[in-house]
Amino acid sequence: MPFANPLALLGFSSLIPIIILYLIKPKPRDIKIPSLMFILDMERKEQRYQTMLKKIVRDPLMIMQLLFLILLTLAMASPYYVAKETVRADHTAIILDASASMQAEHPSRFDRAKDVATRFVSGKTSIILAKNVPVVALQEGSRSDATVALQHLRPCATTANIGDAILLAKSIIGEEKGAIVVISDFSNIDSDSIAASKMLANAAGIDVTYKQVGHDADNIGITYGKLERKGDGYGYTCNIKNYIDSKKTIPIKISRNGKKILSDSLTIAPHSNELFALSDLKPGATVVALQSGDSLAVDDRAYIAIPDVQKRRILFISENKNPPAKIALSSLPDTECTIVKPPVLPSFDDYDLVVIGYITKDSLLPGTFNDLASFVGSGRSLVVLASDDLGKIDTDNLLPVSISGMKGPAVLKTAIPTAFTKDIAFEDVSVNKHLISKSIDESIAVVVADDESPVLAYRKSGAGTVVYSGFGEGDPAWNDFHTRVDYPIFWRQIVDWMSGVREIDEYNVRTGRMYPLGAEQEVVTPTGTIVTDNLLFDDVGGYRIGDMDIAANLY
Image (tube, rainbow, N blue to C red; front, side, top):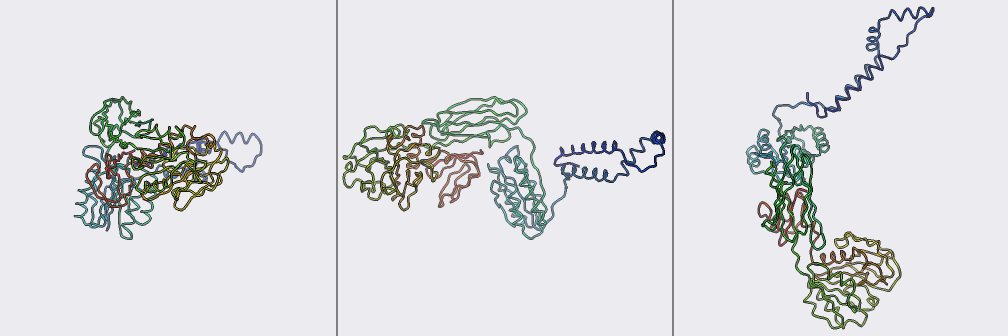
């Protein structure tokens, strides 16, 4: 008889000390003692083996303890048997593992699973694909419906949530006399979730049968990857694992936008991992391909998407010649920053972003903020930095805050995390003075002082965005933010966010993720073109949504 947990049989060894203890334990006896010589004579006559047998047979407590340990050990070992018989039910729910590992071997495990599934098709059949989110492929179909449906099913590049698939099958069967058949390679599964779901199905009177397909296959694959910004470019690091019993040297090809740019190789010991890194990656679609020729191709490629950012034109208005904020903006990639001294200003229409730095109440000509309101309303962006006279200037209600005065030192905190405040330690900024302010309607305070004055806030105005920064343009009399290492990062994230450039993780996703589109639109996927309003990344490769390219990977 096979056991699900054969190591638990070692529990039988606990019987040995119990038996020994009972054998050496003296048995109390009621006897009359006429003399010491009588006792010695009696002990010589008593045979040792008879004493041992009597202790075992006559002590019920020992028998109970031994039986308890035997039954406990057998329960922990979980004995089971495989019944070679067809499931008979009024309604059969077939669960097919559609995860990435089911693409292994030739023919694939998934093809074998479909062959097995045909043997369990009944008069009423439901078919469920076990992806990371289970999908009903057929509900209460006939034999012919099930046969046709099985022919059109294919695996995807996600994980398999078999536990949830069993619960879904249970709800579909309902009160009928039903059975559930799970067909999988049972690779990288949550056994606890499956066991719990099976118990719930059994409690409802539904039999659950497991059928395993596939066997151990030779595989070398990319199990993890990380893309992160390195200066003005990006760096990529991935982990490659050798699941084979022998050392392998794997050729690696790197291509960008369909053209080969680099070849390399990596030697990996059996059942070991090695890191592979790329630096200074350029915008476009990059593919790292292992030339392993193993049984599972889906994990042999890593797809990387880096957006091609158009040059951003920034106008910086300030009474100062070269403030720290302007220096930080000028250092950004894909950015052209021009500084001008008011009151004579160029046309705003030539710029994507306007930053107002240090100004006095007499710096700007009347109507300047009215022109800026039109500029923002057309879809462009405005950043207004704190200065001493800002509260005295008529800003045409364009700011996301109303200013009422000046105050001394303050402690900052992040009120709402955003894309442009990521990894910025505002609480460590030393503030010497700040403007007393209050959020206006429909504005969002991101960073606030301990008196609840917004120090960083934004609001939508027409099709554009206005940001207020109470840090100023970099004056030590206000704070030391401009001296910190995360100051340039802050400006890069602000400009990216206002320019519509998303975080790099938004362009590189894990398979299994749902991506709401808001409305139906055409999407190019690795397997073809679809029209949807809610995109599921269920294949590895490149996706195109409008003019946005996204890469999906297993990790």
